[in-house]
Image (cartoon, rainbow, N blue to C red; front, top):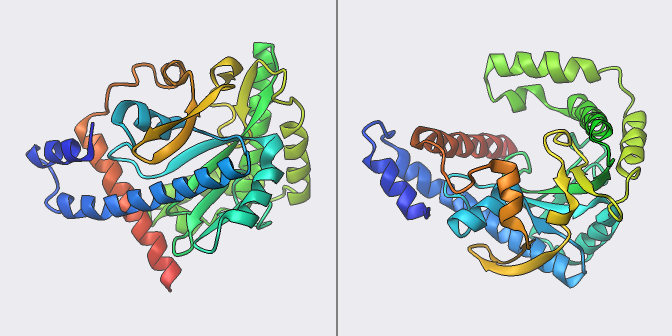
Length: 290
């Protein structure tokens, strides 16, 4: 589905919000910003031979919609954890002054284990390209689940330690209470040094080479494990983002992740996604300007 088709469908709906067309024009600006950020990351990675591939909803958008999902704006990529230092050096050398990277390697108070890239004028909480790091996982299914839970738990500890409850709850009292009880309080007594040591030990425990299954080294580790055979081989293809590296067996990977990946969510949900993301970006950018 194209952006034009989505907007036409939305405006034809009897319950479409009156301001949706203007909101969507603003939203498309943010989509363009993340697309340019991804294009920059692609050039840096290709120049420095850093292995990466488009992932999750961003990969879905390329296959189903020809580029970005019309009601989504952020971008996800995967990079082997073993190449993190190589990526950091490549970004230091070639990212340029228009963009910046953010991760625990660059800021000890970063709340997430992933890396985010953003243009200088945007906060990473609002607008970003997410870089998830791939690690190997045990062969045995029970061990694999236990390992993924360990990785997710230790990543949650860092999130809880450094998340800003007021900002992240976006003025919603129930969200604030949930973050406080489920994320912040359980992490209060955790040592940051121990969190980081445990995280690295887990991330390096099962190298990608020789692993049959992969997981990501972050809070989403236990969401899904990935057969290595679906992700080992990549290729550069022309997309709505421009040339981007994607897994060769992308249709099989998307079927594993989303089932019937060619279907689209109900229209009210898609409209809500646009309005939620637009409001979030506005809120964080307003706070950045203060």
